[in-house]
Image 1 (tube, rainbow, N blue to C red):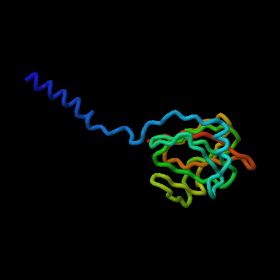
Image 2 (cartoon, rainbow, N blue to C red; image 1 turned 90 degrees about the vertical axis):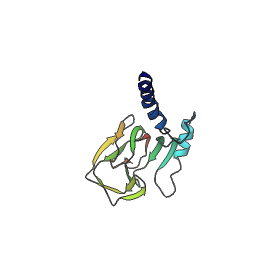
Image 3 (spheres, rainbow, N blue to C red; image 1 turned 180 degrees about the horizontal axis):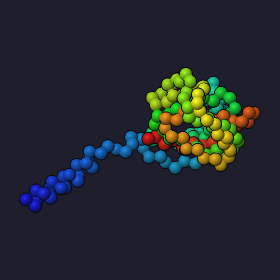
Length: 159
């Protein structure tokens, strides 16, 4: 009887471990170094047809790091259902518009909605050194102050 109980206890311990799936399907990140000059050069070229630019420091299925330059126009409202944005302002000043709803939303990918206008949102003046955590399902967008540019780094974590 003791042997049967021990076998049962062992199987109840081992079976859940065997049933677990792999944490991720992409390989682990390797060491990466981007100099200030490399990031600056990458931010000099806006995306095709856009008024902003970005450089990816890392891009993984569960997280990525993005350096972003925004101008005072042409920026879109973002809404992510599976990403938390942790943003630190590096240089420039701008306005973060957060919350409310997106007028005329456009689904651009699964869990990603963009738009050009927010309704019922609040604004926050952001400066170098400021940190912003934007939870999932929260419409938001950054604009530089008129005639300037806003640079920030965002760590996006998938939930």
